[in-house]
Structures are given as structure tokens and as C-alpha cells.
Image 1 (cartoon, one colour):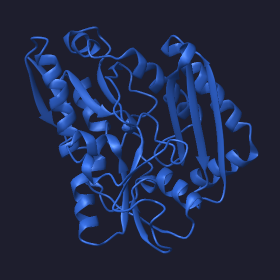
Image 2 (cartoon, one colour; image 1 turned 90 degrees about the vertical axis):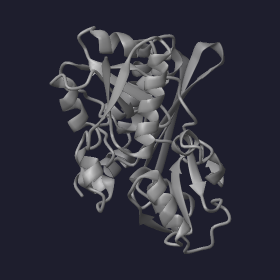
Image 3 (cartoon, helix red, strand yellow; image 1 turned 135 degrees about the horizontal axis):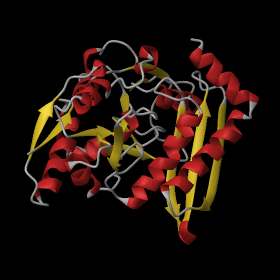
Image 4 (cartoon, one colour; image 1 turned 180 degrees about the vertical axis):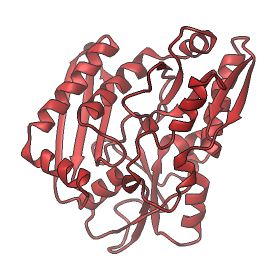
Length: 305
């Protein structure tokens, strides 16, 4: 029997049960083990200020390494760009909607001074660039907790990932799905990542059967960009890759100052048939961004904060 490690939130368990169902359809017997992470325990501090890489993965990865679980199901956007020795990302299943969602109001309909809840420095910074008149406030908690806080009137609107809402059956709560060109998503947003030991064992073999080649190429480009920029959740950076005509991969990226005052965009569109080629595209965009003084100032201000 294979043991799947997962966080205990509704969304994490939905993801774990989805993977379990896919593997059981392949005649593999599975069980789920819930593991609490540091990120689950720290709920009163903005993620960008915690500053710990692997906030939602460290304890799960320890369980993989000591053999307590065989595979782990993560949200790709929670994954550090560097994995512990002995672990690998065996699968990126087909990606859900990567866009960010406004819940409670459209962006245009919000009155000046409206309170908007966001747990992400990336979302908050881009929102300030779009609407500097809004009052952006930190919001933590699982998806259902954030929706409850909105319904209680603590916020006029909140920002969440479309993917999480759709997976939990709450697509009807999406007031507006923001175009990627308006709100560039987090690296890996909407994609699952299945992590296993890099030993070619039963867990790795099972997870590999769920890998989607298109999703892997796109997420590889995004993760390479983030890695080259030394990023984590404390960096106000968005990146989104998609496959377009002619076998090309289009990668859009944005770096924003936390106050929204400076926003820098870049993109590439190149022929790409392998994850390695995708990673090269991501590294290339990162190199151009890092060559800009504006971007270096933004990163320095964030890391020195």
C-alpha cells in the first residue's frame, strides 16, 4: 500500500484524494496521512514576513525522507525551487485555472478605500499598482476561513486562486477571474506537484504515471525563473507560462515593488519541446530582469526588510 502525505486543509485533502483516486484507478492501493507544517501553525503573520523557505513542505519532505510516506501532494506554488537531496518532483498533473480571482466584488466596482484581503505580497503589490486607492489588508487561513471572514464583512473583497475555488466546488464564489495580463499568477499556481524519493521505487513509479508533459514544461519555465531570482513567497514576483502555436512556450513575468509604485514586465516566446528547454527560457527572462536596476532595487528592498 502506498502512503500519500498531505496537509490537513480542505483544499490539500481534496488534492490528496484526487491523486489517490487517480492511482486507485490504476489498481494501486493507497492511504492518506495528514502532516501539519510550519505554515499551518503560523497563522497570524503575513507569509512574506515569515521568510522561511519550505513553509508548507518541510515536515512533509522529512516524512518522505524517513520513509513514513511514499509520495506527497503539494500545491506547486508552495514548493521551494531547491529540493532536499534524495527527493524529486515526479509529476505535475494537468493544470487547473492559474488565474487569481476577485471574490465579493469586481476590481472595477470597488469603491475608493475598500478593504481587500490578500495573503500574498505578489497579489497585494500588483493590486496596489492597479488601484492605489484601495486598502490592502493581510488575510490568513484556509480558503473556507477566508470566505467566512469576507461574509462576516471584515473585507469588501478578497483575492484567492481560481484553482482552489474550482477544486472545492466554490466556482460560483468567483466574482471576477483576473486576466494574467492584469494580475500575473504565482509560479506554479493552479498546478499540483507530486514529490517522491528519487529512488525509482514504487512511489516514484506510481506518481510518474500522472505527469502531464505540457504542465511540466510550463511549470519548469516558471520555477527556473523564480530560482534564478532567488525567490520565495517574500518576492513580489509573478510568472505564467503557456504553450502557444508552433510548439512555442510563452512566459510572462512581472516584478513589483511592495508599494505598487514600480512594476516591471518581461516575456519570452520561444520554441520549446522539453522541460530543460523550458527552464532555459525561464532563466533567460530572469537574467534580463536582473539586469535592470529597477528590479535589483525591488529585490534588495524586500530581502533587506
